[in-house]
Amino acid sequence: MRRLPGHTGLLATLLLIAAILAGCSPAVTPTAPPTAPPSATSVPKSATQTPVQTKAAATPAATMAPTAKATTAAPYYEGKTIEIAVEAAAGGGTDTLARIYAPFFTKYIPGNPKVIIRNQPGAAVANNIFYAKAKPDGFSLLHSSATAISRQQRKVDIVQYDVTKYRFVATLSGGTGVIIVRAGQKARLTDPRAEPLVIGTKSGEDTWQGPLIWGKEFLGWNLRWLVGFGGSAEYELALRRGEVDVFGTGQGFLIERMIQEKTGEPVVSVGTLKDGKFVRRSDMPNVPSFEELLGNKKPTGLPWQAYLSWVGPELVDKFLAAPPKTPDSIMGIITDAYVKMTKDPQFDAQIKKMIADTYDFTVGKQADELVNLILEAPPEAVDYTLELERKFGIIAK
Image (tube, rainbow, N blue to C red):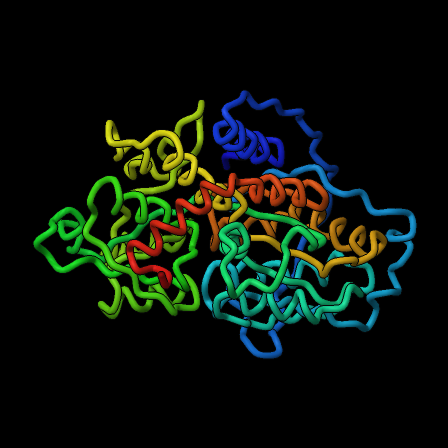
């Protein structure tokens, strides 16, 4: 299995984006990978949902070392329950990854606590509730996606949270977004006389939409948006029913399934940043990057800065966080367990099966670093994006 660079690779990519936005050259200091761990168990049933299986291959990143107090605090979790709030409906990638995590936290956290999943779909719902009500006692975690970061970056009015205040356990990325078009409908994308292709989205803030928004603006793509969905599982179902024509995901297994079943076809991806340009994802060599499709119509200056700031969160993809002010001793226990699970062959097999063949992750303080770097987008770039969204009716004027 091919392994990706760990935190250093992700941070290098984000620093490169930041450097492009700022007009300077990035410098990256490599970080040493963490030490190894053991193996895994079965997913316990959630209080409200049944577990879903998941897919990938991994490379660890440096982790926040647990303190002496954390390593001796095994009794703290004995007989206790950890609840992971998931800002997505059951069955999508965010939910699936949380359900993969659950049994491995039970296995590797001293005291072997029970872990349950609570789905709270809806734009900003889980983040708002978690930020306002979750106690920093180690028994409440949040699993969300880059969309939550993008919402805050864009100052969306429903945001009542601040991700920079979270204590990050980890981020995990299984690949940047790929745009799927319903089988047989691709020609409508570039035919202005045809009925516009309908894009299914939560509330217009999904980070995989970068190629669609800029594609409509600079390539004249024939698109319109339909908001109100709960996540990728709902997008896929709506596409199968013919209720929408387009959605995006970074999940290799989902893309593969739709190709095999001939229900949808990938037409473009955000791509992978290499030498300052977005190129094709190595696992999808037949799918062009959006930058490649733009060709000589690629914008410069502020429009391209805005595009880079939009797709930046794609490089984080999913994140797991504890409430603000969670003590270091508790964070040490949780992050140590996370690093151990990433070395577990059973964890690797489940990610490979259900999420992606290759993935990248950061842990603890370095996850904090990545998220803060993304949120440093120039305000004028954010304003440009908001204007495009209003222009296309994605958000209210």
